[in-house]
Image (cartoon, rainbow, N blue to C red; front, side, top):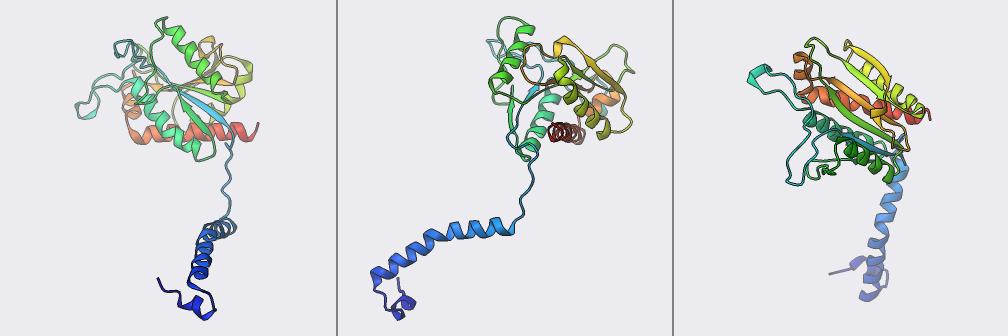
Length: 247
């Protein structure tokens, strides 16, 4: 390698190599400093927050079989499709929601993913729900959001519902409920209700969201669509931001 510029400055080949190395070593720091100065800082309203998402159902037994798939949309969807399962809808919403929260600074944990499903505790449904809540406690979550879909024998029943139990969870429930109401105008709002099944085990604010009613054919078809699920994910993200910004 030739260092003609350095030779003109009176440096030997070894000295030129040393100077060149130091320039290269300092370049990243220089460029990083310039980038930080020129690029405005993006506000992260969820920085430092830990959020646990619980896409409901889909517990696997010791043989790897799903033992509680949740509800399923009625048949008769467009193009002859079978009704979508609740377990799949809520997992899709959680997977769309997690990166939205992470982009705003949150650390997100999910009770199950496609590659790491929730395992059966061999102690029944309530024990599984309690174990998920304990998982949220172990992660020291600031918020625990359970995702579900509703089902009703009355086919015309539709809409969304928000549940909470402890009074310390009411404000989180209100923020999420309001955000869902704004996300898709015209949907039936069944309000907020206090129920013990949300969780009596968690130590942080916990909310259970019934995102829609799968037994209603129109709403079941909507919940099967990626665009609709993306809107739900964005609404929940907005609700969490609203909650933590006003904390």
